[in-house]
Length: 109
Image 1 (tube, one colour):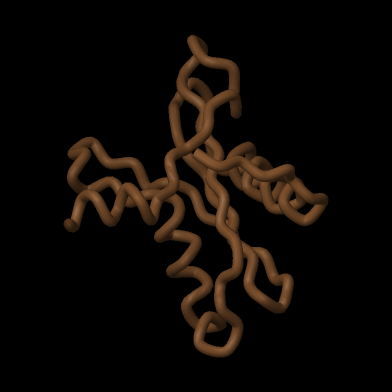
Image 2: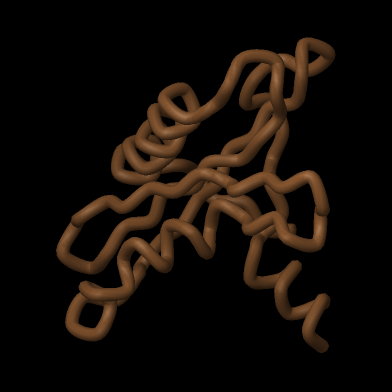
């Protein structure tokens, strides 16, 4: 996998996802938060909607995309990131989250 050096605007987007994570995450529960940047620079965040039935769980990325839908026709998404943490056994934010587009493409393809 090709990795690029993070620019300040990339770090700002990750920080926005981390802030959403901290705001939304109940204690001792795992989850994922996402942040996306529109071409205008506007940042939109989302948090996973976890369900008892895993089939009903909605990932953080489509939540953020849904929140940005009204703007996306004239202001497309340029970048999206996701952060995660799991229970006390894992340090928060120490793992990469797979590219959602790749995962979604594999699931539907």
